[in-house]
Length: 71
Image 1 (cartoon, rainbow, N blue to C red):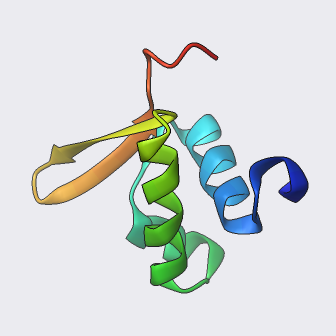
Image 2: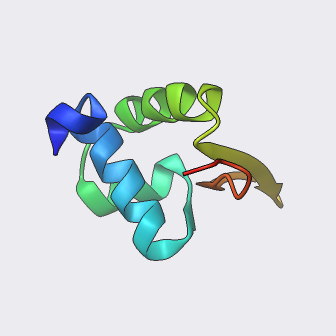
């Protein structure tokens, strides 16, 4: 699936959000035991492309699928 999504980190982000509805980079860092920076960088193109959206829950920036995204 990595070829479809571009890289393994984006694949992890999308599958995690699909299963859990929302997440934040530090949670993914703990879950997958990978560098925080790689997850932070993965969210940018997904949000820019309109696939995911972010919102604040307290001080935490949460990400979820964009309900307005056509696919």
